[in-house]
Amino acid sequence: MKASVICAAALLLLTGCGRTAADSPAQESAAEAGDTVRFGGYEWYVIDRTESTETLLCRDTVCAMPYHDGEGDITWEACTLRQWLNTDFYRTFTEDERAQILPTECENPDNTEYIGTVTPGGSTTEDYVFLLSIEEARALRPELRACDRYWWLRSPGKHSYYAAGVYSSGEIDALGYFANYTGYESAVRPALRILRPDGAPCASGVDESASGG
Image (cartoon, rainbow, N blue to C red; front, side):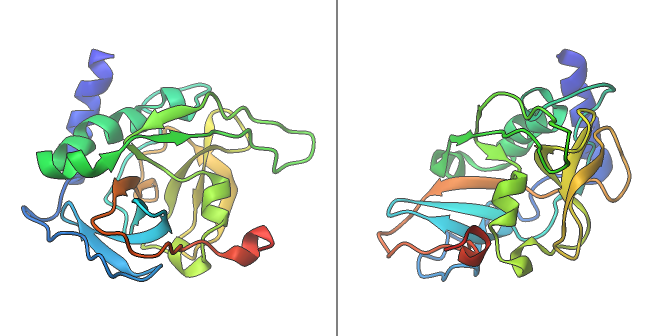
């Protein structure tokens, strides 16, 4: 475990992962669904809302990092990227910002995208910062999925040593790629859930047509 933390810290320095501004304005309470808000030195899309919370997806990737710094089968629960997001990355937020970030229960369904193949997704986790699953990404409007480069999802790929992702075009890659891939196209696009600063009506960045709504 200690070695993983040291490795993650080294990747933080090498890839430039971390906050992009020392101070960030308070979240814009009147933002519409799909608009960007500023929080913690980053710009985020609002992808879901309740009366008291908002779920945010970083507009851009924050760095390149492997899903898991190791070989063999892996799930979101045990991967080093989850550890980094909920330690080093989480600590880049100020104390006041961290007070707004809520723990989120993340279900991790099996990957059943390929006939005759079921790749275990692992246990449900509780995370302050997380990656979207295949199902969550698929529910978004395509323009919200599109990004500057390929980014990881928390779901497994076709094999247990693969992780799924999303192409820069917004197309979901359920096949995935080696979880320990370290190239430019192994980007991290965090998501988190925060307390809303107001009681504005509920809104969402979800594509209702994707779920038959």
